[in-house]
Amino acid sequence: MVQQQLADFLMEEGYREVPSNLPEFTIYFLMENNYVNVLHVINYQKNMYITEDQHLHMKEKIKLFFAEKGIKEVHILSLIICGDLNKASQFCTGDALTWVIDPYCNRLVIFENQVGEFYGMRNKLENFLNRLPDEAQNERPRDPARWIPYMTISLVAINVLIFIICTFTDDLLYNIGAFSARGFLEEKKYYRILTSIFLHWDLQHLAGNMLVLYYLGEVVEKHFGRVGYCLIYLVSGISGNFLSMQHELHMVSNIRSVGASGAVFGVMGSLVIMVFRYKGRLKQINMGRLVFMIAYSLYSGFTAGNVNNAAHVGGLVGGIVSASVVQLWELMKEKLSRNEGRHEN
Figure (tube, rainbow, N blue to C red):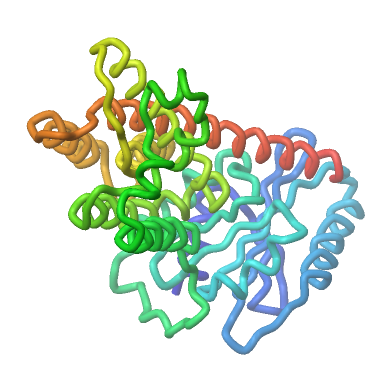
């Protein structure tokens, strides 16, 4: 059982348990020089229900418990053991110091508005969960309200819908939406730098981009959040068109470009930031596989005809840069939230 294994792990880390008559609520604490770190473990069972106010009230009671012992600075992180992420997420709306442990796949879940670190415990908890044997995992109950990559599905749907419209309007959308250096610089049609990334010449062009976008986009959206993921997609597509324009000017050529390839390569680039962020702890992908995938995709583009390779390279770079910015922004928010929680204590 994850709860007992977690208890053993925390004891090994030097935490001490506060005796309790309620097995669903366990408090572990670690004394430092002038403050105490507290892990409030809640085993949130199927038939159990706690409101957000009750959760916050329990934290206040914990602070009062240590205050009575003369300890004024108390840092509390809640660990919710729950396989129903939607159910567990209710605790995370008003409390940035709450993480979720999914016992069905032995993973630590940290939502977007949560702190990303708690005095070095994130790496320790993730490594602990990764070490748990497979036989300790239970079969996850069916959850119709499980997490769905809405942004990825929406982007794919938009691209497919626009392609269907194109089949009934001949070259109309291509004439007004395709990107070119001349259209951008001379004709001042700046909007095309964005519209072109939602257009595709044929069904093969569309299918290739959308398949990759769907399977990679789900992973990226879950990590960076829907807004961050959307920004990465758009910035990558735009940066791909910018590099395409520079290449077009250098080659003194006049071509029309369409396609989400730059944005898709940007999604690949954002995976690089994810791999660095987790330092090899991602189960879905590692740096070797990712480098091979990117290198093979670039090679296929350079050896094929009528492919805008400059847009691919530009999108890849744009994805790495934009994902880095989104990641830094999230880390800054986590740091601010952590500092606010420390001041409140």
